[in-house]
Image (cartoon, rainbow, N blue to C red; front, side):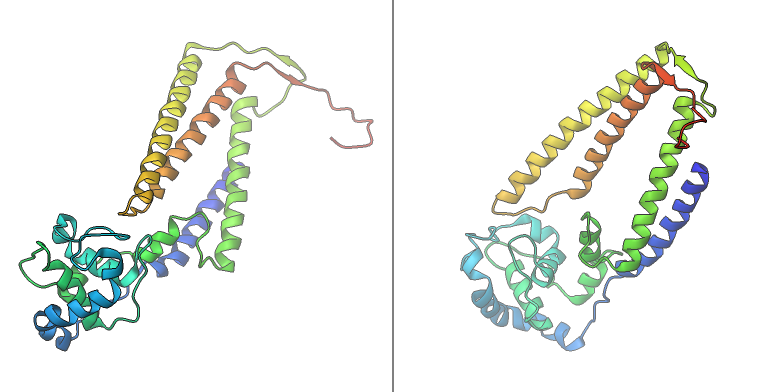
Length: 278
């Protein structure tokens, strides 16, 4: 039955992947010829006006920074011009998105930033470059996946996810029980003796737990410092989650080895005359 539970869990997991797959399709970038034709003409004037009205309060009139990060002489945005378009469109950290801006205004202000205060890219940022630089997965969908409870989680996903966790838990506990205690329980006290391989396993799982605990604390400190800085770097939740999962697996491995090879067990005789079947 534990194997059946794990098999059904795998099937349910595949179904969930198909349900979430629709969220990963990015919105296609519409390339308006009129916008493309006017980008070079508009960014010195329209871009400056948009920046002054919406961005200068945080980034400074000359891009010197303030409440927002410094834009003047920023090598990061010069190397990745699409990043500027993404931030203006979607926002990040303490910076809000600007859905009220028209397409030509977005490209105008992005190019104004990319061509001012020491920033200089060879060619103006265009919709074609944004489309080329766009990933296969929608950044917003990836952001939702990085949370424990996505904001747009719907009832089918909740039901499948809950059932999936129950099946996985039952299957893993069942397999562990067979491995640790055997298929048949014989009444009496069972003495165990640790083997050299079991000792090595305990040392390895303990070392894994300690190493990933250090990495987890270090990553949390890095993310906290980045979040508190003016750049407001988003926390690397994927790496934090991986380290936390490895800590849990390390502890679980140590406990399993202890139960199997270091802890004496006892099986009681069932009293068939009792009122309760257990």
